[in-house]
Image (cartoon, rainbow, N blue to C red):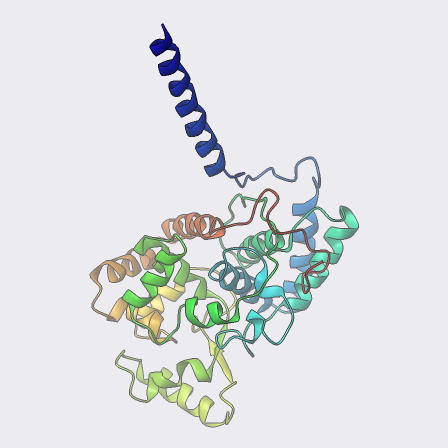
Length: 323
């Protein structure tokens, strides 16, 4: 009898330990209705502010999309790119003189705070604004998963090392995507399609007409060379998607097939030695519906990159500083 009681005791103890371990592993999940009770109008408030910003400057759509992307690749999607300070991610090499739209985020945050103070995180605002920016540019929509909390620290060194570079190989970029949980070539090619809107500085593409190993259509090369020759600081800009700069469409992929990719990393998707990326470029150039569907899925996956949830982090009152 004693042996049975001891055995039962240890069995119960083992079960308890397993349950405690599982409980420790469970984290609150993001959901599309996270603010249904606490801030039911948040999506309308953000949409209104993004619409105003895009009406004022169409390029802002690409800037808001890029902020969310650059946020999620460093510390996860925690709003850390928004923090001020000389050691902030804003001043990392991929972001300095490049990441923009911070004033628009300030305006969105102020409007959201007026609607429901202290409830909605800056990280969630970035996720919603990115979706709305794409939609208002003619692209797809998706149900944004919400419930992120804001990080307490920026990571400038992480921004310098984690963000994909236009000078890297497909393999190197794929590894950086895998590091944030985007482990499919589809994620790389679909999200690269975000370059269907926006601009890039000469500093990022002048290698295209001076020794780059990726082909570039001759007329485009001449025009870019002339543009950059007039920009001693390298900050003159050109459209990432030639002849379709403000419309979210499949034209970016058509350009790659015509050797008109602005960045080396873009053109490498089609002209490099990776057959899988080339095949997807071919498919997306012919099938905008599939591109839109895959882009939306990849944005949801990216937005779920290491979010702070539950009691982690905080809800910033001002997106630029911790409380």
